[in-house]
Length: 161
Image (cartoon, rainbow, N blue to C red; front, side, top):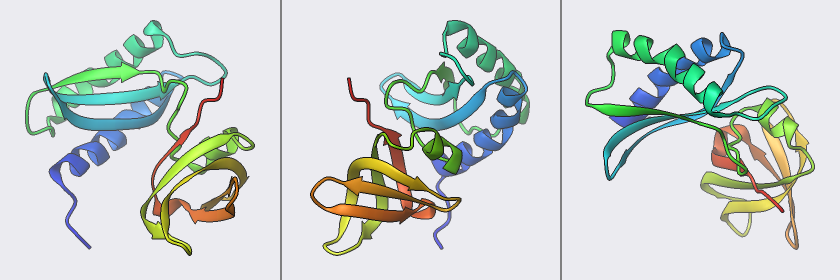
């Protein structure tokens, strides 16, 4: 198996460090990304709040909860900005519980490698079933596809007005 990239190592370590600190504030760390944008490197945390909408106050709370711990651990190899954000309308789906919460709704899934016959990596459809390790998506005109969570590179709720 390939050695994880520096970016991937930062994301994994940040997830381990930030998740319990954010949970202690009554919030959930849905996802995070460590990316280079025009202004430099950004560690962006996507947070959610059970039964409510994430606002500026929750973002500030999450940021304060992790800021000092990130400075103390000092595992990020270069300067970066910390951002906290709500997941937005097209919220990311990572865990089985995230998929369960949107069962019956439209989702977009991209897999690491092509699956099924004919091979495809992109699935847009209605989420029909969720288990601990797989989801089933009904793609209009193509039928149901059961995809293992370990094969999913990225998944999100597909907002429908």
